Image (cartoon, rainbow, N blue to C red; front, side):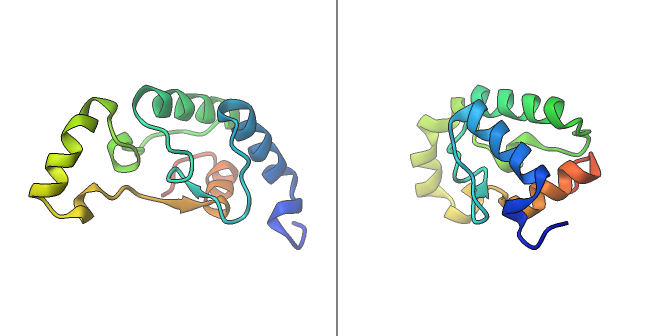
Length: 109
């Protein structure tokens, strides 16, 4: 593998995929999925295409740990008022971790 993650062929494939799917240009500091601001059906569609494009087994992937369900958005304000903000936080990971997922061909986070 080359010195920089930004020079690898796998990174270039991921970059092109994300740019084509959602118009976002990733870099080494991109935080999946926080920076994408995807929710609900859009997030579900992205993950389906991601797994198909890179041949990744998604066993163990729990959608609600990474994304907010769009049907719950009206209730988030009240939820935030009644419960601690930490409960609204979703799992995050970086480009290096996504490249590892692609390399391993399975969801490992």
